[in-house]
Image 1 (cartoon, rainbow, N blue to C red):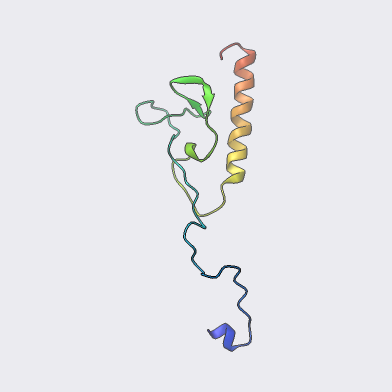
Image 2: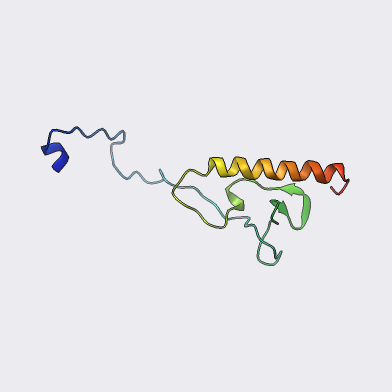
Length: 93
């Protein structure tokens, strides 16, 4: 109200300032960790019980923030792919 009274224009692009679901980044359904009893993935995003399966989306994250996680997913994917290629070359996968 103060800004509008000072002559500024509200340029919200949404009808409601807090639309439900605009800031959701669902994560954590296949958490990463050392112990297969408490986590699904190892540090390379590799499924503990299925070594030829890699999960590099938000499921691997143990917590969430309000920032867009896309760059983190891309980094995790590049890292996991590099690891998988090296393991394939060694015939470990």
